[in-house]
Amino acid sequence: MQHDNKRYVERDRDWHPAAYTPGYKTSVARSPSQALVSLQAPSVSELTGPDFRRLRMGPHDNDLLLNYREDPALAGAAGLPVGERIIMFGRVIDQFGKPVPHTLVEMWQANAGGRYRHKKDAYLAPLDPNFGGVGRCLTDDQGWYRFRTIKPGPYPWGNGINTWRPAHIHVSVMGPAISTRLVTQMYFEGDPLIPICPIVQTLNDQEAVETMIGRLDMARSRPMDCLAYRFDLVVRGELQTYFENQ
Image (cartoon, rainbow, N blue to C red; front, side, top):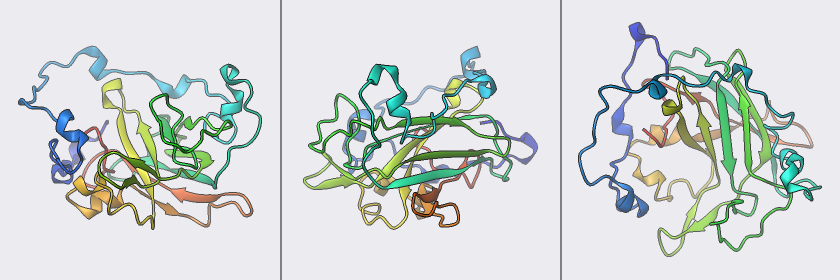
């Protein structure tokens, strides 16, 4: 992400877990077995990227209650998805509170039953015929983004005998180049599965965990419609949101 060199604050890398973390079983196969190679001469693609200000969005790209039925390849989705309707919103800012405008924020999630619309997801929860589980939007001049969706359900995974992932929404935010794309997850405050999740337990600092928790915001909730959760994304420095790919 871009930053002001005169006011740069180095990221605290102690937040990040070791690549080899046996408690999170898939990290065993994914972790590098040899020393990492530093790219001393980055290519043009690593220094430049798309300008999202002219990206044309669909009318409901950020509304997961409606956008699946509008996909012409999915004719047949006609109703609303099942589940607790929520608003997810926040700002993309730098470490000093300066907004990051006109950047692409993408999100994807499981449905209310905890199942993704993906061919490799074999969880026994049913697919929702009216829910695709993906959305995107651009931040405005002040760095704000907003999605309307349903609250995803937790789901079991094969890390242990009875291991469950907390309800979460995956979030991606683009920097000034493709190589600066950042990915994280938003959990929901108060979820008892958060502290016992093996992935969360790889983090060394509770403050890092707190950066990934969306907070209930009753002022932004819509009466008789949606609860709202605020999730700000800090893209650089000591107050940075924990991102998975760093």
